[in-house]
Image 1: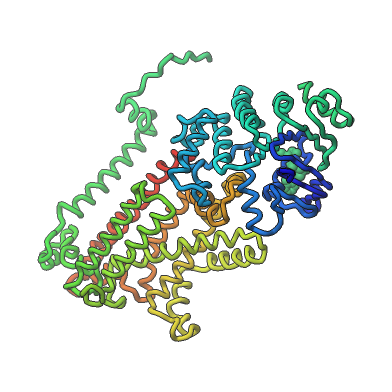
Image 2 (image 1 turned 90 degrees about the vertical axis):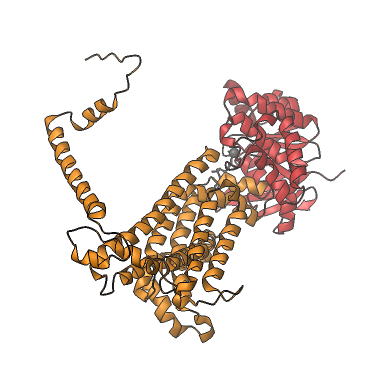
Length: 246
Length: 361
Ligand SMILES: Nc1ncnc2c1ncn2[C@@H]1O[C@H](COP(=O)(O)OP(=O)(O)O)[C@@H](O)[C@H]1O
Ligand SMILES: [Mg+2]
């Protein structure tokens, strides 16, 4: 149990010649909930997309559940199975029903047969409170509903870690809380979560640690109370005052 | 100039709509009347020629010849339709050729049934239908006498070439499109060069090359029948156009689709087969149907390399001394056959488009 869920050390990421992440060190324990915030373009998405190899890092090491993230395709597959991801734009498959969205990956990976997968999917759709939409297409749902389906779809692979990249940023204000409620529920069940978000209420409520990034670096981190009430770094202060101000 | 819009605009009646559209001014009225007169005259002449003054019945060739006051002589069709449909296929075996065509038509109709729309069922249906077609036509199995490709002809040959080209060309197009977007630049660039080169050549020159030049270049065992070389060349040509169409459909997809599939741990081929291609084909449906229609029509080019397709058969059917005055009627008949196929194809395309839109709102 001492092994961390995610271990990142001296990781550097370049887009061409652009240095997007500088020497990032980060350890996330099992069951820990980490919220990442920071100004736009600071590398938050890049950081969590490196964890499941949607982006390739150029230097340093990443380990997920003890599996090193390298060019070995088996390792990449294993890490992607361990870590579910939820995107800002939901990215549901528009040509499949909600249920098919949820069952596709578990069936294709051979993890479940169709009947089991459907049962699991229905259970998870109930958990995100939209079982009645199972046979609709994503285009027929509201943004909040789509994002909840996206969460259920990721959970169908029984991940041990969930990565969220601004899951509520594309939502109308009245739908944000229905998604956050689901995420709070997940947190309470002990899921390891890494969540890029500017929902500070959510951060205060569930985060064990808040991380502030700017210009590809981790600038400051700490428990939410300390982070919000007593930030040390000037950039953090400036950022927080902006967020609160609006 | 204030204008009060009534709460509910009354729908104009049919007569009012006609009046508003065609007779609202004096000039409109004159133009409408002139064109109406021309249209009626053309229509009347056509009906006179095609029906009123026409001669029907297979044995009426002589009647046609003497009694030529401008009417059509459909007798040529009644007498010679077998040549148009079956070419030089042996007379007693022509039912096989007819059945084979019917099977392909049934396969086409079955592929309208949504149950078949899965990455596995649709290819299985088409491959099975095509195999049945081939076995029926070629024979040599199940007690069917063998009829070699040299004796195939007419509509059956056209359908065979068309189906073979699409069946070979479509998977090839998918492979080309995937190679064209490979992450390795040398693969992508080579593929782009090949596609652009072949697309810039006329189809006819490709057919000639495959039919006539290739045998000098290839080793003996690889030459094969001329028919199959032409099909291979045509399929390559089709694949290059279709590859660009598919690539266009892929480019319209947001990156997030592939990323979501990756994040779910799907392998490259799973992502291609279940996420990328189904959506790319939806996006690219109108140009794909268009490409398929063009491919069907252009099968008639094989006449020039000496195949007896439905066009050539039509010409031959009215080419004898007995029927040489009835060329137009023969072409009308062949044109009708093309029309039925092409028109149903485009209606099918329109239906698919409407049907698929449901899932992609
Ligand atoms: N695919 C890409 N190619 C080039 N530059 C990129 C790419 N993705 C992100 N970047 C750049 O990397 C930096 C960090 O981006 P990102 O991680 O998306 O920031 P954040 O999520 O914090 O807003 C930005 O300057 C952005 O322009
Ligand atoms: Mg981002």
